[in-house]
Length: 221
Image (cartoon, rainbow, N blue to C red; front, side):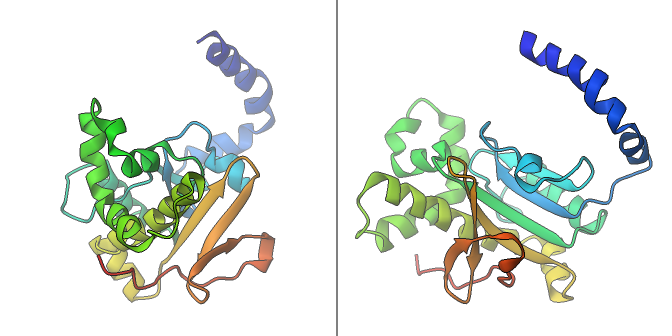
């Protein structure tokens, strides 16, 4: 806790003073560039990763970067998505998974969830991911590679869930919104974006990455 308190003092004395105009301007409202949906994992810092300032990302975080299908639950995810699209008018939504994801590890080995009933229930919104891996990835047995495949497939499953939200569907229908699937490998700093033309995740390397909106037919479940 002491580190956090010291951090507040450093922020107030060093950071805030150098960007005071930015923070004062934010009092007038926000116009974020994108809704960034990612995992709660402490190893991910969306603003650091994208080098964005306060006010530039609208961020939604939960275990496993999960987006329940519309109407499945009455929770903060649906409200956050609705507000981002309908009120803030974001032009892009990114769902970003990450390497070494504990939630996806639990999805693969559900014995880990025996004493975590809330987590087990929450991961029910990734059951399609589990079935895709179990039925379509029998050829991948090495644990790290299997986890990586699970992380990637889960991003695609959650993108499909995202499209069930009425505000998202309407905005996509009038070409006012793009959705993107990313995977962040935090131990190397690499970010991979889903390229539907190649049907795979490819490295995002500055302006060289120009993959269109992430969409594809998911394998049958």
